[in-house]
Image (tube, rainbow, N blue to C red; front, side):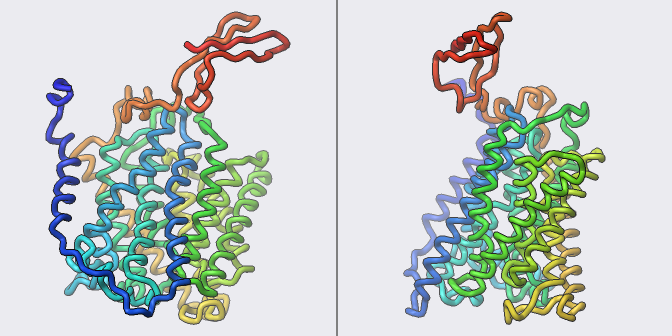
Length: 490
């Protein structure tokens, strides 16, 4: 214990000291009664509570989705990076994140760009304040926690691009800076009535720009700054560690996405129903599109291919979910899957090491979704929206194109600067030795592979690694090539 205490440095103590300071400051925040003027809609509250829980479920779903696709020596580190945002952003959102995204607009040149951080500092006037102007039937605190779930998963999406080589501490710092300097401004631009994209007339129903384009472009920036893995340089094939994990993750993401999109109607209403249905339809068509397009390229249909395609469809329908009709969502899913599939192909021929294709899937998928919103949005589905190009309004398509371009440029440049800045403070990249050992062991002192077994066969005794979830019995007997095979714990 004493030896461990002696090893504590200012750098290692700083995260806990910061958290302790925040917790101490929270003690002195005045407690006010919850606001309730008797006009809340209990059905809307019930649905939004469910939707919020569904969106949260997407974060562990993402952990399974990514964790199943990396090398087995990096499974736990990848999953940990996906879920730790629930802690980091969960605290940051209450302290200042919600204020930056949905607080009163700053005055002067920053108006429309970012919220005033003092508006709801430490959640001041949130639980005790009047409802959010665009969600008058539910408490503001419920709207705020629903939006928190979006803020949690967005930095988690970036993990797929920087997996297998980024230090955990560096990722924590990235999550903080990205949430404050990229996610919050984009949320303010797109979803605050005074945000400049909102006032421009751009539509983003549930996060095409705010979540997926921002994460996709940050992923591209991170891959460029971190450079290539040794296995990528040496062109070593890296097979998924656990394809059933990928399937489980896809199921949780698909299920949670109903809350993500339908919940963005902020009420139990017809728009929520339409968004729910378009979400499922786009995912279904995109999964088939990816799989059938792979077959056209001479591949066999795969579990991973269908799962990735379905996720791309969910990404693409996100900005359009409440604005387009159900039949058109089939087209959106098909086109998005083909576009992302082609992008993955060209990325595989390049030197870019985006480990799990985050930019081709989330970045390109989000861009396709924004543009398809510009084509197929219609006031027949959402009276408060706009008619798209397909209904004779080409100017709205141009608005969506402009909003998409601004989101892409800002997300990439800001994220690139963030990664470069972090690299000046603390090296982001693990050493070659740590990368070879695997980040599970080097960053967390844990292993997805827990041990080995000695297997006696006709050819002799061989040693095999055993994963934690299979390392359950001390001895077992099986038949191999007609001969008894006994496995012993080592």
